[in-house]
Image 1 (cartoon, one colour):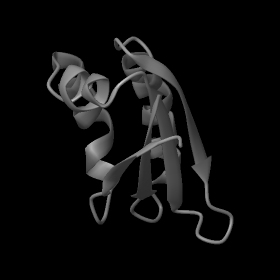
Image 2 (cartoon, rainbow, N blue to C red):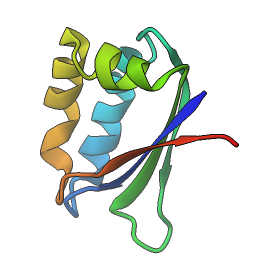
Image 3 (spheres, one colour):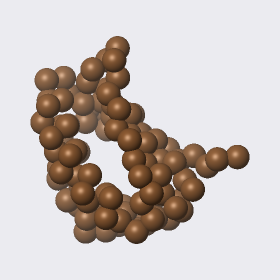
Image 4 (cartoon, one colour):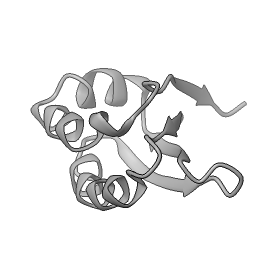
Length: 95
């Protein structure tokens, strides 16, 4: 199991629209091969910051299966306009 971690800094004032778009985008990511669940949490101290945690069966399920798919293009259209700066995504494995 691989954990994808992304800190999402949303442009202040755009949080409600981001959250609405993310609800729509959830249907995209949850339909992908290798997807094993996710959490989106909002920061209490910085309300325009979120953390996205996504569990994938393999690293390639995310980096190839999702990121190189037509569905990812829809994901980008829904979400990427909200980020400033663009998030760094890292992957973790349980020891």
